[in-house]
Amino acid sequence: MSIDAAPRTISSRTTSPEERIRLDIYADLRTAGADFSGFLEGFAYAVNNRVWEKLADKAGRPLTFRQFIEAPYPVGVGSTLAKIKLIVTLQSRNEARPEVAEALASMRRTVNDLIEAPLLTHGGDRSGQGYNVIPDPPEQRGNTREYTVRRLKRDRPDLAELVVSGALSANAAAIQAGFRRRDTLVDRMCRAWAKLSDDERAAFLQAIGARRCGDDTTAGDD
Image 1 (cartoon, rainbow, N blue to C red):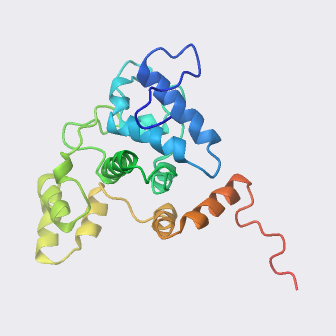
Image 2: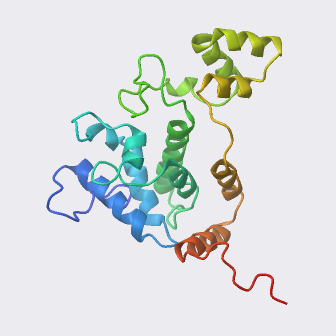
Image 3: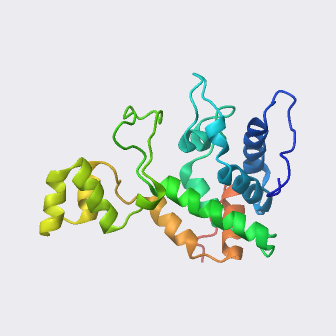
């Protein structure tokens, strides 16, 4: 699906534009192969227009971005935030077009904000279901020390005092407060992915698609 084209119809059961967009993204995630150009441009349209806010879960509540990505279809697109974070770093074959480049750049900034920002703030549902999420304003999001200290002062003033005094790092305090998690293998993979060339990324995607990544049967042969 292109940046400015109307979403294609795959099923007569989808009636609203947002439902068709969701189905397009769901389908593209599973058929893209090594070329994610179509997915990237369709996903950019979805993100830049925040289509998940016009969709609902089974209880009729508006979706959060996380639900839109992770909930099984037909509620979401049945993916993971980690996978989306990797895919959006890829380049579209149409990215030389200024309007495509601008749309994709906007999408990548928004996705980064949505994934990296703390999921819940005061007033949100802390049940872990992702409902009634109240995100911080975009200008206040991030992983900078200033942002972390500001949030600690709001949510955990005891830890904020330790950070200001130098007794505890801002990152350690954020982890202890529960709004930042420890680095995982997926996090390290994401950082490594950002350093790969397009050819290396395509080779990796082909490898995991063939279910043979790390399964070199010739390894160790003389």
